[in-house]
Image (cartoon, rainbow, N blue to C red; front, side, top):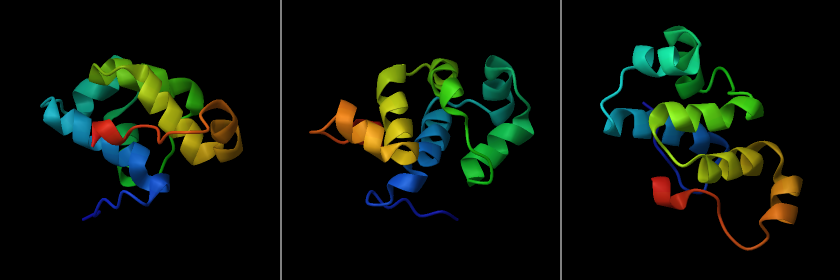
Length: 98
């Protein structure tokens, strides 16, 4: 089982996606239907074997009923850290989701 480590920003997006889905009592199938993908894709994203494309992060937030801005910031922090530092020089992206 994956242990969440707040220092490990590379895994934080997938951890938050899984945790928020579970907190909302949504199945992977329900989220997949809302996002227009397969349940297998959601499983792979949550397991870290597939990455959610940056263009789909806001849609994932919507599927989970979340404000997309913090999730998008976190995705930028993980995948485009230089761009994230330029846009958000002071603060971490999504600690409040944990």
